[in-house]
Length: 115
Image (cartoon, rainbow, N blue to C red):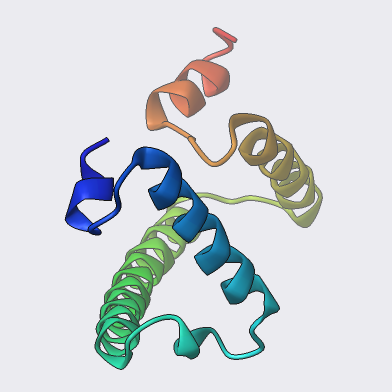
């Protein structure tokens, strides 16, 4: 714990005390920017904005690909409304159970009756 030396504290205890006082001040503050320099806030905001833009772009691309797969699947198969409704329920439960980690291999095994 060499950080206390970098902060010109005489001991680790003094460093911890200063850290606690800083955190208490932060909690008591209604404006967090008083404790974070503007440069850090703007840098963090810029990074978050960039991440948001990238995620939105990637989600859009995935949605386009998924839409294409859905149309190809619908065109290649005759699926009645009842079967489609049951499939949706099955898929919702599967995605919940697997926390979104759905794999094609698992779907193939299920469709082949190996599950």
